[in-house]
Length: 214
Image (cartoon, rainbow, N blue to C red):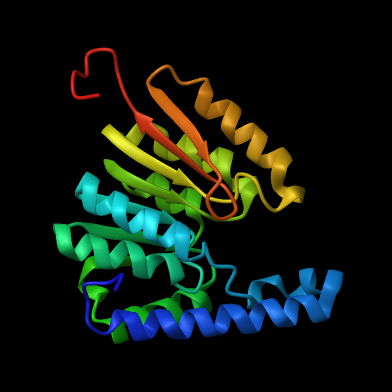
């Protein structure tokens, strides 16, 4: 059992069934699938979901930022863990129909009280929130990784964690990923490591020389 919320497991099972159906459809469409990419779930996957869940339970953040609600797969993991530690997940998404679907799933799972849904341009939404952010999941279109990082970095709390997905795959996103990773490594107060989990997860921790806890 992954989730503490009793109804979350059945919601997750439905997500997994959709993900498998999407994989079949993507194989059938081939390169033509890129034209309808927004219709696919494109989930972080169970391994990454478990990792995110465990990190939130361990870190016990007050505020979790999710950039890219999409259809709510990763939001389910974050919200279940957040509900257990008294945190709030602020999840941001440009596509209202995706976030509506996510809200419906989280409602069924009984986890909406732990989630603050915000719909709109990520950079505008980030500018409007003063922070701080204790935990960040970065999982939107990869050309936005760098500008979003520059927007939330000054608002990271001490010992904040940032999890960035798709650091290894898909291959066509690697130029944008490279720029993001270079920006992260340019910050003296950040330590970062790339994990070969799922499509590649980069875990970044904020640290300063005066922080004796790390």
